[in-house]
Each structure stands twice: as structure tokens, then as C-alpha cells.
Image 1 (cartoon, rainbow, N blue to C red):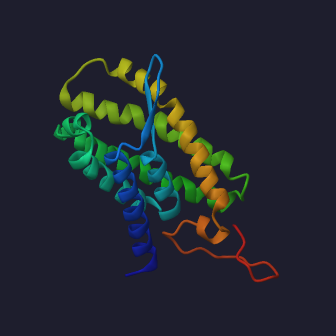
Image 2 (tube, rainbow, N blue to C red):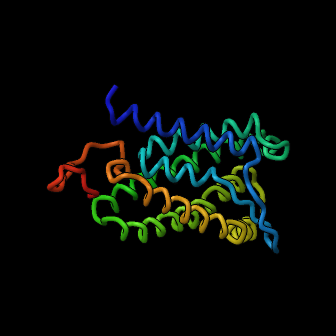
Image 3 (spheres, helix red, strand yellow):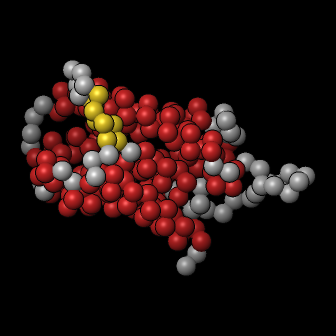
Length: 203
């Protein structure tokens, strides 16, 4: 199997399992307020999978996590995901938008070096939530024939604001900590440059 196939699958599988285990174990914390916010690591891991492993890794990670949550999540989560519309909207819509994150990271990787790359990366994370939340809610409301779409989206935006900052912060720390060669998307072959000491430089 080609390196550009098995590495993304491996990255997506590992990070998807970690995300699913985190949800099953309840590894999250709540920020109280008018819109109660639950911050967890699962979306953070999806974003890292897509950035480092590419679109395929992002899809694998998010799908594995949703399946684990459907079988081993909290009773409320299992009940929600027992609805086929909610389950498949989370699989398809989440997978689609996480895959787009993989393509977007490749674009900024090729054009912007560290640490300046962290700024457009933050924009990618924000854009993910801005586009994903109405798309996922819209799919669920349309297929179920429900009303109240606009209020649900506004409530989601307010609830997810802390998660957005959390994702940006944690993923940025990971990118800073990783060696240059490991920041490169693992789903395509690119030219690598070396400095005089023979070490791979960040592109």
C-alpha cells in the first residue's frame, strides 16, 4: 500500500479512536452560561487528523468517533445518535467539512511558513465552525421536517465559541511542538528542502 494511503488511514484511525474514547469516557468540561458550552477534545483531534493526515484521515477519524459515540457514549448521546438522520448527518457532514480542512491546510502549508502559518490556520478553524454548524443543523432540520432552524444555529454558535478557541490553542501548540517534517501533510509527496546541516526545513 502506498505511503500516502496507509499513513492517512493510520493517523485517522488512531486519532479517531482517541476522540471516541474521550467521548465514551466523558473527557470534557462544561462552561456554564446562557448557552452552556461543553468543551471536548474530539473536534480538536478531527482537525489535527485532517491537517496532518489529509482529507482521508479526517473522514476516518470523524467516522470512527461518531460510531463509538453511538454505541458507547452517554445515554443522551446514544439516544440522539439512534436517530438515523442525526447519525448520518454527523457522519457525512462532519466528514465532508473535516476533509475540506485537510485541503485548506495543504494550501497554507505550501504558502506560509511557521510560525506565521498559525494565523491562517486559526482562520481555517473558525471557518470550519461557521460553515459546519448551519450545514449540519440544516441537514437535520430539513430531513426531519422540523422548524426553528435559525434559533438552533444561533444557539450553536454561542455554545461553540469556547470550543473554537480551545481547538485553535491546542492545535497550535501541537504544530509548534512537532518537528518540521511531521508538520507536513502526510497524504501527498512534496519536495523537501534541507539546510546546510542536512536537517529538513519547514516549507
